[in-house]
Image (cartoon, rainbow, N blue to C red; front, side, top):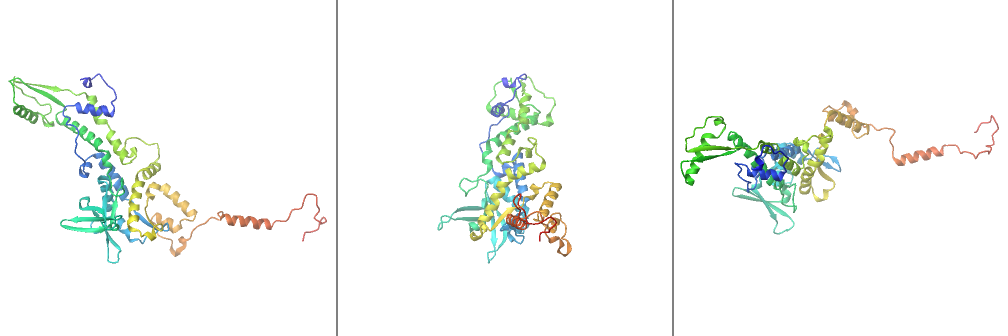
Length: 422
């Protein structure tokens, strides 16, 4: 076949690569089965993408703002960030929610309240234990059912955080893995072929010719199995093979360019990065001409921001009363991505102090320093060069009133030389 011609070298398209791979000995064909979350993270690219996004979001803290001012006393943010329940930390809670939503399309968390309606705990709920549907009495509301063994509990939508990053109806989430099935299958089978190639002592396949007569199907299968068991694997590499006159073995040679093409192909990695909206430089696929701060901001804006907004919008939609919408809101603190190094942080903090946004105590708190004793550091600096437009206009008018009235050119002011103007 022409593809095994050692003299022929050229670049192959992705479609040609799949055709070439399918013609190689040992290729078993593409799998028709669907991927589950457990199987999906066996793919190193998917694992990297999910772990990267989930861990980066889990490391960010959620803040509640009332009229755009942070509220450090909010109990819900303390639960989400630090201790949502007695079993795992806030980091693990956020990581579980994001990872499950990426792999399964959606994730769930139960909000536990006391008798007064105050939120006391939050628990992740497995996708296999929860179902949801429209309420029979109120068609426009969802109700959730949690199945624990033989016990079933029914909860209103306000007691369930339903995290989904992609949906076509606003209710059921869809996993990005749906767009990667063919790419994951191709990558899986390519790696499987390489594994079998080296497992069989770098012989992709061969022909065992039996000259002693005609064999039945069962006898051929038995002979094949015994040969494979006796001669395959790294332990048998470069050992002597003993054959009698009734058998002859002919190895099939594989063009090393094809093996190189399979081993160096990053098509599936590129597709995973594209589907999860991760910049290629985060996967090491290409270098970037941006500096560290620009790359960090690019990752925040293009990758993390949609995920972050989806989470805080679900929290606000379920847990903020209607009459407080617009007054209260939840946001992730992304300052770590906006000031990636200490020099930038010092520069930004200095600007906030000089413009009066931060006091000295606020600036010291940014670097873990205690407040200045006696409240001296709680004062804000304001430049005398700054004023409002109305004050500026009044200042100009007052200045104009105090100026002497100028006389037309050539007109005497009635004063003799040496006289003083009273």
